[in-house]
Length: 91
Image (cartoon, rainbow, N blue to C red):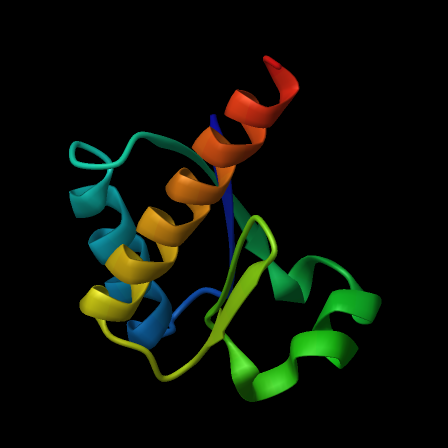
């Protein structure tokens, strides 16, 4: 299963759009979505600051601004990578 982490904050329209785009892609490419509010800790706030939303999907990262198509391509790449790793492990 692919895991996506969305680093977000409240009252962030780009964050809301990123979450909506991710949710709309779940039917095409199943994945688990974890939301992390960067304002929940000083370390996260310092690390991400005003760069939210940030999405981490496997080894891939997207930083705002990004479009739905970029999320789709990144999810597909993570899915293909996951399938490839599973096929190698099955050998």
